[in-house]
Length: 122
Image 1: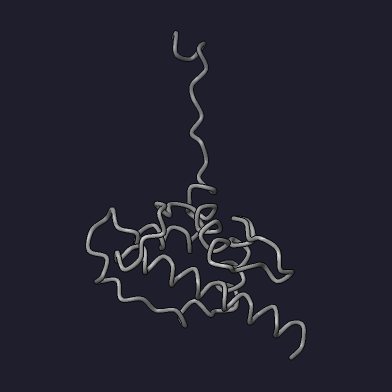
Image 2 (image 1 turned 45 degrees about the vertical axis):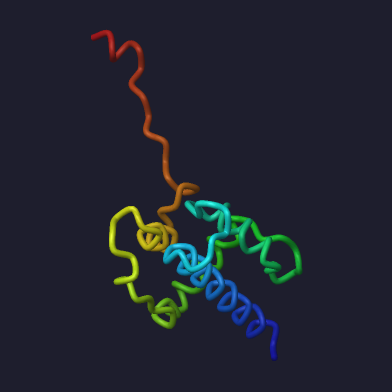
């Protein structure tokens, strides 16, 4: 197996584990003890379950963003279909999964700017 195939295989494995954890947590089949609301928490759960990056080190949120980007850019996202009927309401983890995959997690959200005091006094 070449180095490129190994990295691609590892990305696929990590993404598969991410999906598994989100589905198991979202359907209530397994409680990880945390509300998995962003990539940082998901990285912590992956680390606790013994997953590592391609160098054998702990995973962080930025590495998960890179994995998602690689999976999306290679067109492999369709290989991980989900039955969305398991997630029946807007507050379910299914929406959090969609937001993470489309890079809309808490880690990528921008903070709205506040008006200057000068503008508020007018």
